[in-house]
Image (cartoon, chains in turn cyan, brown):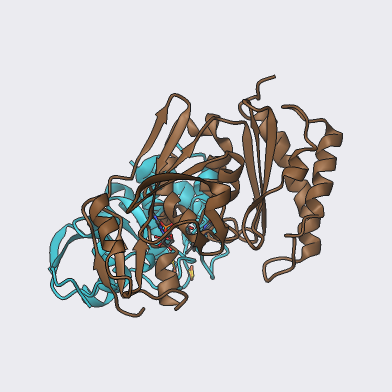
Length: 159
Length: 283
Ligand SMILES: Cc1cc2nc3c(=O)[nH]c(=O)nc-3n(C[C@H](O)[C@H](O)[C@H](O)COP(=O)(O)OP(=O)(O)OC[C@H]3O[C@@H](n4cnc5c(N)ncnc54)[C@H](O)[C@@H]3O)c2cc1C
Ligand code: FES
Ligand code: FES
């Protein structure tokens, strides 16, 4: 069911207007299935894993717990465009150089979460606290050591 | 998720009107949605209509002298940015930071936490020891309810039909602390938590217990054992013994009763120590 109004979002810098968007559609599904942006992952759909993290007006947001209509009018950044941002670019490079991924399923979520934290002023945050603030993201492969190295590297290098 | 119609009122009056009309259509209120969307998706709640609060002017935080008022739709993450919270209400800051992870807290709200009234809510125990008041608005105007009467049981509050939580008011800054135990630090639910605060005006302690059914509770019998602003070691031990005997410390899927009884005294002693250190209580 729908109120019928089109929904306007700016996604990765492009103004997007969607008719017929059901009122109960989750942002995660809009991104993946309507817009084909499959970089954003669905890990649990219950808010536990962080794989679906995107930036909504710069703030990290779990797209599996957010209705697309609730973020109408905002600007959304997904992993597909994060490297266009200098901080996002530094985060992506740090993950690659640190080998901070194995299967890679959790990586888009970690990259978005860390980019959001660093842009929010996380470069001033002590490293242990910054790592704790990534606690909403789960990785089942790496054992986190390489991810922690990537976080340290990105924090040191982010402009 | 069963389909619903989303309504987004522009004003408080319109929101109340939306909630008051048509009692037969199951209607839910949406703030951050971090509880509600899962409840709808997993069938614990049903709604044909969902009323979103996102356009209401309640994303506020204000200090009137030392009285703090937090608007119900303020995302929890925004509370963390307030420079005086750590000094005036340290337990509140710790409780906010205990909720989910950062991305969750960008959407989760204070009003939603109270609306859900979860037994393991991290905010309710702290609201209890700070004597917070819930300011409620509805068809017959504004009223104020103390948290202890507002929170009844899981998903059960003192809200009447078509009423909304507008804000939460904290009457005075208090030396306070909040400690929790859980398996995973972020995005997990507390197995047990303890909040403590000392009121400079009546010179008494409050102690609350969280993470256990049926709801977070004040434990005045334990608080009575604590004397002045800096309790003696023996008083803390006595309070801990009272806590350990509390009927709420049951076995469930998150922890055994035995574990909880052991843990509660440890958390209490650490919390009292933290509260008497941070902010330095008046002597
Ligand atoms: C992965 C995960 C981890 C979590 N971890 C924690 C945790 O560690 N600690 C914790 O305490 N909670 C936790 N939660 C629960 C939840 O995030 C919090 O309770 C949050 O504060 C709810 O706020 P919300 O704005 O998202 O509420 P919503 O989901 O929007 O609403 C919750 C309920 O309150 C009602 N409601 C909301 N606002 C109002 C209002 N203004 N007036 C009247 N009724 C209202 C809604 O109708 C609904 O019934 C977690 C949830 C998830 C998914
Ligand atoms: S898919 Fe959203 S948190 Fe796991
Ligand atoms: S690399 Fe596989 S889940 Fe993190």
